[in-house]
Length: 213
Image (tube, rainbow, N blue to C red):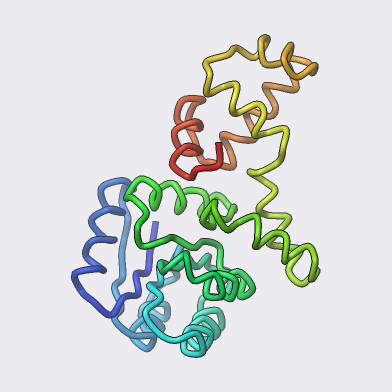
């Protein structure tokens, strides 16, 4: 995996780098302190994910995201910033950013969010994702992002996953929900795919870290 980390502080870039290298095998990381350095990294080799720390004013972030998207094309971008600043999170969402991590998030949440993004999903702080989706639906501006989010937040998938977390078997879950055991198996398979989990236990662990259970 190739990752691009953009943060003006070297110590912060090193923190992200250590966390990624500890979890992902054969990860190659390019560090950048400025947008120009980031574009130089992208010109050398493509990245699977871009991690961008939000340190600047809203207008500057918009400019940076525009330049990144022009050069990174479909590479998913994950922003690290202040989740309590709803306008900044909303701006990132509207730009098509695939993830937004709060500075207070743990390393496990960061890794789980990046796994989800790499699998084609999205991650935004649970406490504000409903507001984002509500505005998205009302304005009908970015339905594509809404559809992608539904990949791992469908009501039925959450119902199944909550019962998996309780240790229930497929048969027991099927009885609870009034569906066939085979259907339960399909839901679990889809959840494991979307969360990039290798087994049921890991699916529950990732979902718990993302606070979507």
